[in-house]
Length: 113
Length: 118
Image (cartoon, rainbow over all chains, first blue to last red; front, side):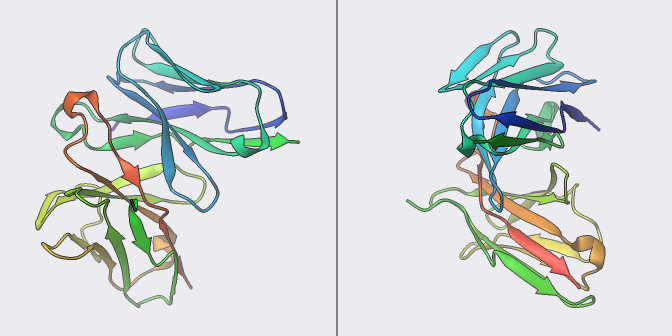
């Protein structure tokens, strides 16, 4: 099946720093989704990308859909303590089962105030 | 304007008991999805249901696991004769239509049920 590889697995940064994380796949995805999961909660959609090369922002977050359709990255600028959590990339299966999302294993972000 | 409601938030079961996890979708949403998250892993698809119908259960173990979404009431994920390996967080999501229509991934996830089998 399809797999998504996220890196890094974890990051420890100081408040105010910028963060970059990425997601790669051996197969093509036509949509890339970035979620954040707070401790003890469900994932919340941050950004959705639908076109190769697309660059989309949501406040301090910016994500890009790689031109090869096999990768995506997420940047967070000027991090704050509430950015702490696990960030997942995800993509829908191709074909008739596009309701089914494949998730990466996540990047755990810790922000030191 | 409630989101997806899951209960209980935490559930402890002894090996061999049954676990019943409930999910009330966003009002007006008729599509429900269940995902499982093992420790330090991403979410994995289990089953997709529309009202009274199972559309895709390819991610659900064939034995001991079942799901339903009746005409009235919440969706239920049922695990019979639980084993330690069933310990995980189970998330439900809902959408008003099939995701992907109009490039819209309107999945809303609940806060999950954390199942611990002792």
